[in-house]
Image (cartoon, rainbow over all chains, first blue to last red):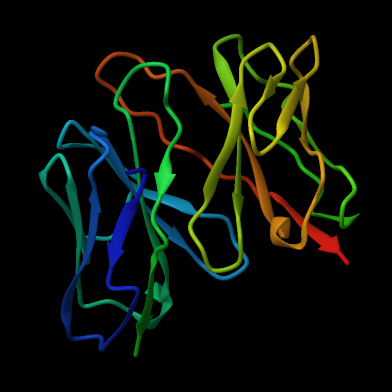
Length: 114
Length: 114
């Protein structure tokens, strides 16, 4: 199983809503990532979790709150978002160490903030 | 991680080899060259990576110059399904217990023409 599964695939939310994005992998990877991608731009790193601990936060606004409940799951909690936060949100995972360090990406959640 | 430079776009005829160049003149000795591609509205997909030697897998070949300042990704027989944005990324090897993120540049939009 080399899949990273993201749910939901599409999400429309109002600026006062609270929602969560979910990411799951069963490859035994101990590093997990959130990226944000705007149209016609490359993915931009948001957060990195290594062995269930937050290791990198790329100065992301607090309205985005990541959570790693266990080694297979990664959540991104959303609250009070702005229309400019509309984007494709990508989750990825990789081995935390060793030679095989390629990252596997999910298909993303297309988020629209209205 | 090394800064990489790629042409913004390239065309290739279906069935012909697609050769995608990447400059990484500031790459350090322990940085790998990774290639990913992203088909429209999907998550990035790992293709191949290498350090010094040329590499080949079922998807592509990676040719790295002797001075490691540039590399070329070769898709030997391009198909319409290879139309995507191709990203060349420099990435240091993962040390014990840490995670190394992928930093995406602008990439090359490859269009395979019928």
